[in-house]
Every structure is written in structure tokens, then in C-alpha cells.
Amino acid sequence: MRRSTFLATAAALVSTAYLTACGSPPSDLDLSLQHPSTQGQFVVTLEPPASGPVLGQIQTWRLRLSTRDGEPVSQARILFSGGMPQHGHGFPTQPRVTREVSPGVYMLEGVKFSMSGWWDMRLGLQAGDRTDTAVFNVVLDDGRLRR
Amino acid sequence: MKHLMRAAALALPLLTAFAFATTARPWTSAERATLSALHIGRLAAAPADPSNVVADRPEAVALGRRLFFDARLSANGRVSCASCHAPEQGFQDGRPVGEGLATGSRRTMPVPAAAHASWFFWDGRKDSLWSQALGPLEDAAEHGANRVQLVRLLAQAYRPDYEALFGPLPPLAGLPAAASPLGTAAEQAAWARLPEAQREAVDRAFANLGKAIAAYERTLTPGESRFDRYVAAVTGGRAEDEAQLSPAEVRGLRLFIGKAQCVSCHAGPLFSDQHFHNTGVPPRDPRRPDPGRAPAVARVQADPFNCLGRFSDASPEGCQELRFIADADPHMQSAFKTPGLRNVAGRAPYMHAGQFATLEQVIAHYVAAPDAALGHSELARVGHPHAERRPIALNDAEAADLAAFLRSLSGPVCERGRPC
Image (cartoon, chains in turn yellow, green):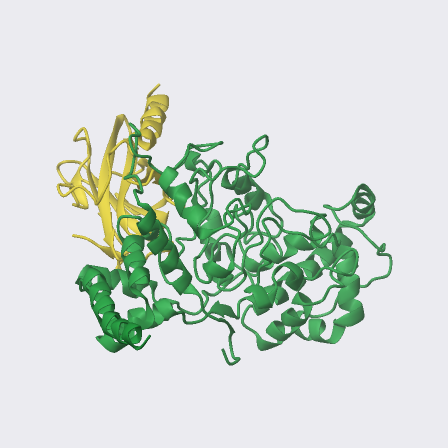
């Protein structure tokens, strides 16, 4: 049951990604790369590659998962979805969490941005009995990460 | 008459001044950054292709150039790569759909700068330039050749150059005249009768033929256009050179990077995001709408000549695009690759099956934004209640300006190492 609920939630993330009205990105977007998951089960941090995102190149991001108390969360199952809410398309690749390199630190491989603009990165998270989701907004201006 | 001349002489500067006043709002720093990102100078060398170790070897370029123009690589001896990718037409054919041994179903794509893509053909069913080159050779509507015939030709006409690059060709003894897993029923039966080791040896030589052709194709790149000279003038502060573009073309450029939203997908120095989009282009045959990218994903994953296959020179780590291919994206239904726009004026008719004869018709399509025959168009329409993005609203004068701008993107095609 939990597994199917989790997967259903992750799938729903995809469809909700494209309902926002458009134009330039909303001015009140939360661009933080560290925040609690939607239901507060975890704290999630996304770390872009040291060189920053490069348009048109496949890159690896790091994902840190911890409890609200800062304890690393190991052996989590993490699904990724996302895309460009204002363009109605997903990522050009299917990024995946491929491995956990140290407790609570995961490699998110296959991330590629094909154009400047607003992208959302949506995560389905499952660790033991806890499931949650997390959403990050990334805005690229002429290929550079807006902070 | 003299009066008229004098009046005209007086009017000309006035007209010029008027035109200047209507177009000469200085570009903002953000706009200048956008313009710079489109400049040809931003085009780096073609990215390395780890699946093709000879990709940048001059001997492979020379061999590939000969093969590219050799019509013996066909069933009837009359179709070469250059038959459709004609150098004098920017390496395309100006037809709605390709014409080889028969009529194809999609528009011939231009070769220059193709090496910058991750996916090839309108649907991206190939993941390297060398693997792409193999497809038309055995397509019944294109070259109609078969891989055993082609390996025989390599042995007969290219053996020293081939073997210097790739090592020995497979022995021809015991090979039928024609055989391929993709050919006619007789060719398929002949292929099935070959021992596995012989099939692999033929496949390897066939793959190498593609790698040589790709090495040549990688040298082809678009050169400088009037647009590039204009951008260099704007960003370099040389106002006198800004006359490279007419006032109408500059207005079109403003639209291109502004409310016409073209630059969203036609981005970077090649004016393409190299990705796939459904923009509701009407199918050539309404009874059989083309599903585009969606079924091509499984095809490229199963292709024996893909980056992860045994004929690739890459390690799995060098096959990132294939490993992380988006294989469950519903937006890929009837999506087609964003074509680059350099030399677009010389490349009518337009879209993946030549559906539109003129640039004006293309622009009118983006403004009308009809529903897709298959899948869902990304475009928004005025008054559409579920629009995910702004409609592209242009009046007739703006559409004309935009078309004028697109005609400023013409320039030469250059071959690396040769004068351009």
C-alpha cells in the first residue's frame, strides 16, 4: 500500500507541474536549495555541480537528506520528476538518484537543462515508514543559476 | 525631374532618421546578453564523441568525404549521401520529404553543426552521428543498400584507407552478395543464415563506415551571418556596423527574443535547444499522424549501433544521454526536434515534413497555435482557457518583421581546415 501510494504521489507530481500560468518566472518563487520536505518529514538539500549548471550538458547534483534534527537519512528511495512549468515539458533527460555515497548523501545523475528559464525539480521521498515530497525551483538566466 | 531627385535626396535622410527613431531603442544589458548567446562565436568545437574513436582523425575525415559523395553506396548506384544532403543547398535538398529510391516521410535535415546534437533525425531515433549515417544506407526509400553489399564496396574501393584506420576488413569468402537484418525478405533470410561471428564482423565494418562518414560530417559548420556581424557591432559598441541589419530586421530580432518567444527553444548559437517539442504542426497525412519522438525512445534503446552497444567505442560512463534518456515523458508524443535556424531562409519548405512553403506560413502557424492532431501542442492560443504559456500574438507587420529577421541568419557553410 505504502509503495503504491508513494508511486502515485510521485506520478501526480508530474501532472501538477504544468498548471501554472506563464510569463517570466513568478517573482515570489522560493529559490532556496535547502528546505523541509512538503509535509516536514525530512530536510532536503540540493547541491548543483561546483561549476554551476551548464546549459545542454548532463551533470550530477548531490542530494542531502536528513531528519529535522539533522540526522542523515540513509537507504532512502528517491524518485525525480520535473520540467518547465511555463513550457509544458519535462526535463530532456530522466535524472535518477543512482547511489548513496555517504550516509544521507545521494548522487542525482543525468540532470540536464536545455534552456534558460524556470525549472522545477520534484522529489518523491521514502525512508522506512516515512514518505514525503519536496519541490525545488531553479531559474537559469542565460545559463546561470539565479540565487 | 530634377525637383523630384532633390525631393528624394532630402526625403531619404528623413526616412532613415524616422526608421532609426522607431528601432534604435538601445538594447538593455539583459538583451545584449541574450544576443551574445546567439552569436556564432559562442559555438564551440563539436563536442567529443566517445563512441567514435576516429571522429576527429584527418584520415577518417578524408575517407568519410569520399564515402559521402559516392553513389555506389546504394541499391541502384545513383544515390549518395550528397544526393539529399546537397552541398550547394546547405547539405539539404529543398524538398518537402526526402527522395531517394522512393519518397520518404520526413524532411531531409541539414548536416552542418549536426555534431552538436545528442539525438539525430527529427525523432532522435539515433544517438550518434555515425549511427545516424547507417540508417539511410539501408532504408528502402533512401539508399536501399544492404550492409554486406557495402562491406564488399569497402573491400573493393576503399580497402587501404579503411584498413589503415580500422584494421582488417572481414573476409568476403562465404558472404552472399546481399544480406541485412533490415532488408528485403531475401536479404533477411541470407543474413539469418550467416554465422554469428560473420554477422558481427560485417556489422563492425558497417559501423566503421558510419564512423568515417561522421568524421567528415563533423567538420561542417555554419559560418558568419549578417546577424552575427550585427551582434558583434552591438556588443562591441561599433554603431556604424549596426547597419548590418535593416530596421525591419532589428524589429524582428526584438520580437524573436521578446514577445514572439522564439528564443525559448531556438536558443544558443545554433538557434536550437536540441530537444523535442510538439507544436501542433499539422501532419502531412491526416490519416496517419506522425508520433515523432515517443516511439523513437524505445528504438534508440534497442539499437545495436547505439552508444552502449558493442560497436561503440565509449564506456558506459560516456553514454550519459542514452543512460538517462527520458523514456516516460508524455510530452514526447508527436514531438519533433527543434531545428536550428541558421540558413533557414534557404531551406524551404519547413517543418518535419515540409508542411509550410514559406517562413510567413511558419510564423502564422505559431500565432494560430492549432491543437495537435496527436499529443498536445505546447503552444498557447489567445482565449485558450488552459494555456500554460503566453500566446504568441503578432500582427501582420510584426510577422513580416520576424520573417525579415530570420532571413538575416544566412551565411556560408564551412568545412574545418578549409577556407570559408
